[in-house]
Length: 143
Image (cartoon, rainbow, N blue to C red; front, top):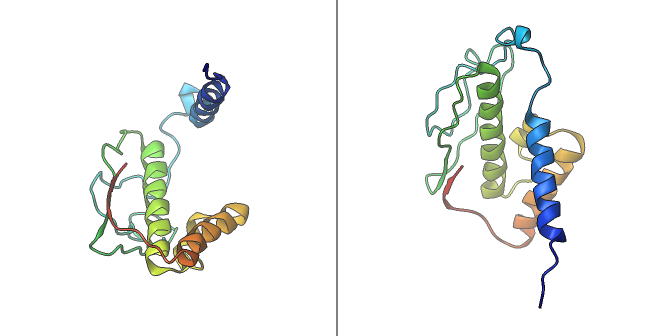
């Protein structure tokens, strides 16, 4: 039986679109002039939230995962301040989602910091799915 290449092509097209969407359209002359809060974070396995002083004027929620949940963010430092700040917030968004799942709380305060609008509703629905199924998470995940 011959498989259709359509799902593979669609997946590759979606991946390419996401990759291209992540590439900025700024000019080289603008490089290094943008200041982003939290850009000076190090590449550790720390699951705590950046302090208010490290993140400038933005006060991020404190996220604590239980000892049996370990999110390891390997090589999440690019050397580019803007990219590193973005990656730090993505890391905390992942931790916030996992903390909400472990707490069984789709209204977890940190979710509202890292998600807005429809994305927040989807994240809360995702967490509620775990609650409804009587499930949680544990273990180590490497990103």
